[in-house]
Image (cartoon, rainbow, N blue to C red; front, top):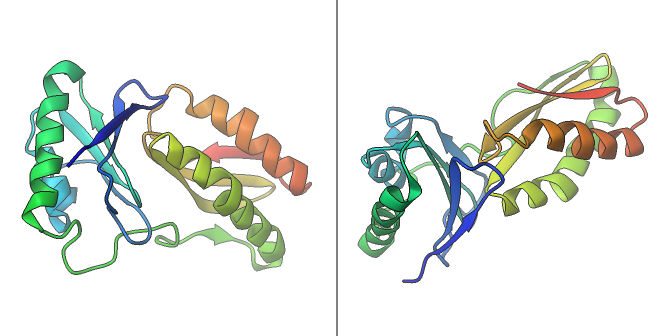
Length: 186
């Protein structure tokens, strides 16, 4: 099994591409070992000292580290991923992962048309781009012209995330939805 490794804009996160499907649908974000109870793969990764976060996508795994150095962590992470897939164990135990549709979003029902446009733009133009960087962005809410987004995986805590939100996503949404006045991360 050959596992590709790619850097992300977040220096504390690396993207691992095992060359096999990771999740069939949605994504799963684990911020601690106790969160990882439903995922044998995430549990295995959190057993490595220095792993601070695990994000599972369709065909990749993003791992966020603490202050440890990548040259010490990377071999252990590669080994854990390889062992997991060779074992045949499930990535998520008996349930669907928490995907983009998971979690409640909040908006006024009169804004439903605008929100549907925002969600479609996020799904077709934004999420595929941030997935390339090992992360995900999920709609959280819309109120008074402000779009609230939840950043996950490599996007969470990334130094570039503010610029991505304000210069990339905000400009895109404003262009297609004049009702959008701003974008914030939650």
